[in-house]
Length: 183
Image (tube, rainbow, N blue to C red; front, side, top):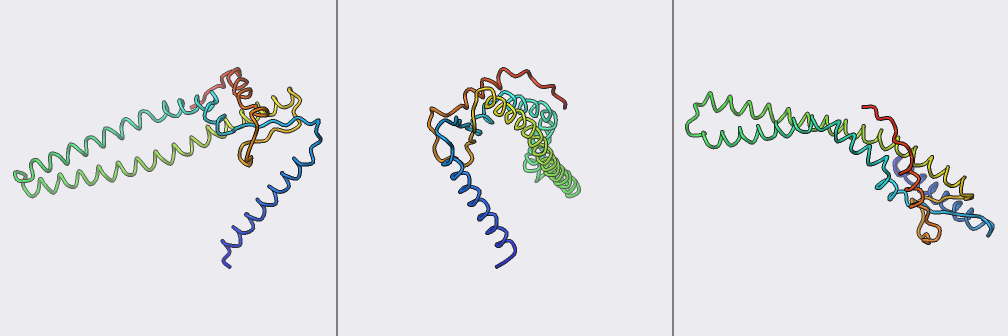
């Protein structure tokens, strides 16, 4: 068995053990306990903090995206010119035009990859910040409302709408003051 296979096996075993412990813990909860359920995907899709982060990233990367699209259009225009004038261009001019297209293509690819990497990193930063705010809101809600446990959607097979507090958490997040944005 390879080291990677052993690691996967260990991770699977740990996850199964954790799931079994969670099920056992829920089964041991006294009947008077209050348990709620939160659909984290829905919170992450609809929380104003997450949407504000997305808009912030769109503004932050808009200039670079526009420049990239302009370069792509320019490369397309050069290719059209190359096709249109292939019979009339001298060999030196055709070679020069091809070099210009190739250089522009490399630049576009490099810029697209760099921007994608930076966008992913910034998206993760924004999501981490939003995740902390959302998690704090869930904890505050649970404490204020007297819940003994709030279960997130990641490992829940079924939750009755009766225990779903997602909308209440979203309302709380909507009432939270907007955080200061730093580019």
